[in-house]
Amino acid sequence: MALTRDQIAMRVAQEFQDGNYVNLGIGIPTLAANYVPDGISVMLQSENGLLGMGRYPTEDEIDADMINAGKETVTAITGASIFSSAESFAMIRGGHVDFTVLGAFEVDVNGNIASWMIPGKLIKGMGGAMDLVAGAKNIIVTMTHADKHGNSKLLQECTLPLTGVNCITRIITDLAVLEVKDGAFYLRERAPGVSVDEIKEKTAGKLVVAGEVPEMVFA
Image 1 (cartoon, rainbow, N blue to C red):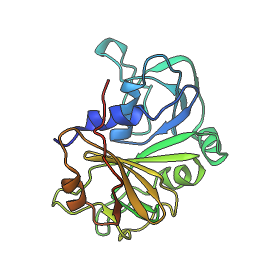
Image 2 (image 1 turned 45 degrees about the vertical axis):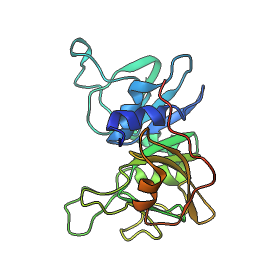
Image 3 (image 1 turned 90 degrees about the horizontal axis):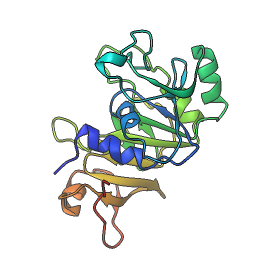
């Protein structure tokens, strides 16, 4: 079975390590704030000016002025800081963010990412994605493996306008965890119940499968 959005976010959160500074993009990445593993301290950064973002609020905790980059209400953990978006982007451009997690329309075997524009569709602009893929030390992409028409989003070469070039190293989809290196996607994990053959069928770019591929484990 393919992973749900929340399960993808749970798997993303397993990548975080104690002391990390992590930026979460709009959509599935933002959900990872709810699944930071117990026993570690992670400072989540929102590009609109919040360091120390917490989980989504309960009804009693909602503060309309406390929002993330996707304009969703959030909470702040003890020790959080609030500042201007200019200072937020200085952190990003200065290389002070350990991880950024963002969605994508396409990725390819050379680590390129297309995440901001579909020709002919109304767009609001690139947002902070260009800065994030250039400034963060590690980039994790979360996405569905194929689009709603069944077409693969993991390609030999991106067809949409690029957000960043040679910058992606890890992808977590609803079907698999993949590493990008040496001009190929390396299959590292598969979603529970999903076969290697299904992943092969839905991956248009070069896919390398070395030995047994373990299923993802959710604690």
